[in-house]
Image (cartoon, rainbow, N blue to C red; front, side):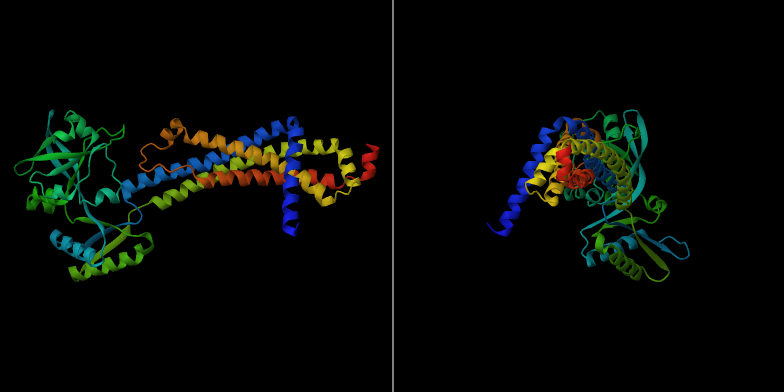
Length: 409
């Protein structure tokens, strides 16, 4: 048998012996291991729940500020005069095509007079382009987001919120329900999608394609809404240099006296960093509980070593080295805490992945993340480390046992 074969046999034998001793003394270590298992479960669950909460926070942020990296682009003059909206649109589209940016959208706010069963009502309206839905991860309750076929409709397409949909009787979208918009002349629009409304949101609102909204506005109304806003979604690693190039390109097209700003709209990473800080605080509390469990395990292990002085002395008599005795006692603690850690991780998985917890943590999440393996690894590493720390002092005590002590005991 070679060196590595002997080493492997020794390690396996040491672990087997440690497990056998844990089984023999299971009554003494059970209560302390319960604390370790609960702490590992808490630590693993905190890491796993943090992953789900981080995804929820990221999606919420993306719906308001856009995915990373979404950049807003604004143009304004040095003297405060209003730039022609069509000139800005042309410059923006030219720059987007030049840099081959696949996701770009106009984004504006306005109102539309809508005829509802309760009478005519002014409904807040966001004017966007088709890519906006994916850029901002717009969720849909019914129907679908705008498509290129909607741009060619003779009747404008609308994506309404749940409250506006309920106000017209929650019709089946396959029946192509319509709303009457009061522009310069009354216009019939088709509802193609419905976005969910939070319970606190009682007001109707809707999305409309920017090109169709402009077609319904008089020149005076278009001037009233001022300079249009634009957004692009680009890779985060090139956002800064690309934003500078877009600003320079658009400014060059619009001429002297014009300033163009390109800035990040998304706040997902900053929010995620705040969440990670909360995770660290809660994880620190779980580690403290884990250390308290380890103290109990140390006390139990010390008592166990005291009762095994004769056994340890006999081993030393038959040639067991100090290193072998140290490793055996140390591994007893490690094996016990790893076993408790495995149970704790399994409980954490059951806790996080059960339907009730998932529904609570993942409210409004489109892409629910799987249980993170990193959480299980963290739990097992923590259990192993605690076992090693808890077994260190008893192992040192065991090494100091002498053959004469065993005879006197």
